[in-house]
Length: 448
Image (cartoon, rainbow, N blue to C red; front, side, top):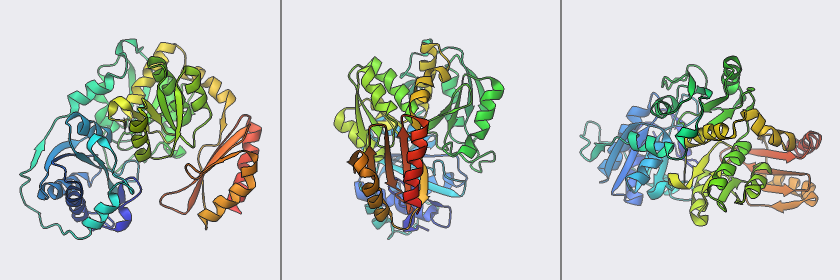
């Protein structure tokens, strides 16, 4: 089964086996090789129940089309990105549905340099080719497949981003959500002096405790409570394939991705003065203002990992951060990592010798953000035009990604969803009263 709807803007995702099964996985693996003609590519998989058979089908398809396939086994998504760069491969496929519920399967696909294959960079061509293939390879030997242990090099690589000796014996709660974080973190943690409260580290694709999507408040309830109970210095939650991490401060407050981007960017710019840093159109003013104060160059960018990874190469940017918890590093093949920002945050708290809540206080006292507010609409284009006519005169208008309006005391971005008739609002103001007033005014236009 290969429903064409599983091909999204940035990856492949669908319900197993109704929308995507092993036959579809075989077709995608074969179509990828026929379209891009890589001599060798890496394949990894997450801990979902369907992932072993799905990964095997992908490898059969790729090997059947003539490529050498490096089987990385059960690993995190960022480890496929790392392997493609480290082994100088021409591509990689990670079998994962990331943070989606247990019924889903999917793939994240990259080319040489861990550059993503998305809707406008080859994924639609793969879809067209894959529709004509039928898997007749069951039982065939995987002659062109070899296994590779990337773990030791990956552990050394992520730890090289920090001075391990500077990390203090912090008390840290980690919620791996029965995802890949529980598999990836142990060999890293054993080289750190921190005290870790390990929660849901057992990989289990049925997600018996909660879904592996920390952006949803209901999935953060556990770690917020646990940080307070344990009197921890910090809490860290990972999504399903562990390419994103989310932080809770010592008081149990969730740390917005904007503020994480600002903190990490500041420490990176101080290490490399004058660095270019990418941030997305939804972000708080805290991000560019912090980067400029530190002596760096902030560059606003469209949302989405494909856009970030291309722009980082074009600009020679050292770091990029998205509100959604994706953090990109020049020295990690310009790819996103969930483990590197976790390590950088440990180092940052240790070096500043302050509680995370104290480090964040200037942001919380000065920047007031709504978070992302999603609203279904009947006509996306019409609503964006209404918003432009109503609020455009109050500030500077940009169409870099959806509609952005920058006024003196507030700003907003409204973006359409890539997959649903939704508008996504992110708004910020320099006082809580103004934030609430402008939020309500904008939502009234969107929802009427």
